[in-house]
Image (cartoon, rainbow, N blue to C red):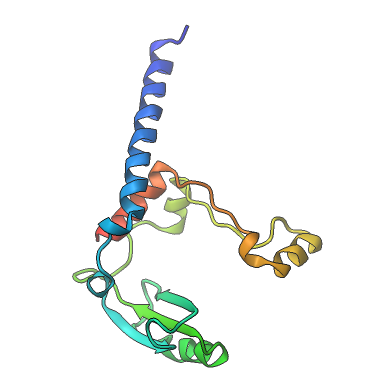
Length: 155
């Protein structure tokens, strides 16, 4: 029989899972998303024209990086890959940074970073290099990760 503490923990976990499911649907539903033209101010847009690109790179500059500093780098990438469109966006209006959490804070909330290779061995790296798009997987985001994403999207 579960004691009260275990019951409270189970209730909290159930509630978080329910809220996670709702947030997941809301955050990734294209009908509920802000239209692209209203989302973020564009600093630069280089490479293939909109609708003609095979690849789209959205560049989010660092919190302390000046807008437009990466323009040359993005243009160079587009020169090498002519079907690439690179768009640098600026902070949401009225903000001076992307988020209030540091990477350390994010990890504390359960965020995870993934490498393209399945492991550190040379064999893993070679396998990933053959078909990189198939060798990365992300699990369903945790409730805390979705809250962080919601904070970014709403801000």
